Length: 301
Ligand code: MF3
Ligand code: CO
Ligand code: CO
Image (cartoon, rainbow, N blue to C red; front, side, top):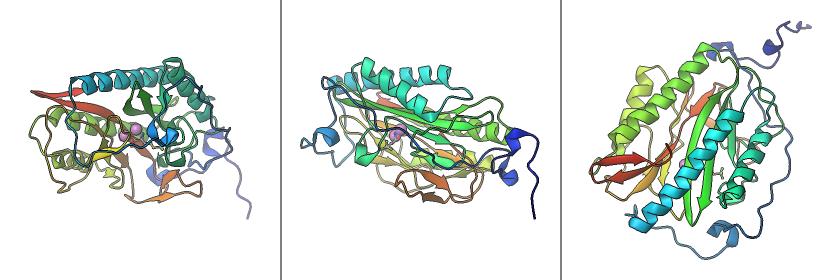
């Protein structure tokens, strides 16, 4: 039987009505990895210099805190420029070029590039892609949601943040998903303070998502960050009994991923792209925070 093509071009891709109106994406062709000039300082996983990630959550001294503030400020600045740039017709590879060029112009290295083999300078995750989308030649379309996750290595420190952007007019389910994800991150950053258990972040995010009828994807954790990209503590976004509590001088990320449907995901053949197993959309938001003497500072604001 021949199924007639819908007239509305937005209805042509594969649409999951159960979870709203959007195109379920698959990775397409992309361009080669971008080149980093000689003079840019590279992280240890690129230079292969020896480096040991701390075994315990690190308490940073004033110099390390200064370094974290610089790199986080740069990451959030670049994310702000991406926000002004994204619109229908822009490809995620165009975003990769923008992020790459702005990072290098600032004298920094785009941390994702060649991290455990990742081929691009930023992660771009569209619609049903939960995390680690590889920028490619698919033009963003009206109705898409796209998470752009930027990490820079600047003067010896990594700064990490992400946001899910709305392309043109997104359906109500999509708006709700992105909005609640941002609320989860905000609730979590507000509770950060000395002596608060790390596990409190997950309980509160889980509670808020559940109250809103959304699912937290348990596989994705926040992490300690500094002269290393990922280190202790692990920050769970669901109910957990991870030990330990926050101390002044610690820096870590909070980065919940929420979906409308299943909590399960699948990694595609490229070894990176993680999609929801039921095709529902996922949204993520991420900040790097510093625990201070009387609360916390969002370094990527
Ligand atoms: N920025 C991601 C995070 O928030 C990590 C990306 S790893 C990469 O932890 F290799 F995919 F870039
Ligand atoms: Co990130
Ligand atoms: Co992160």
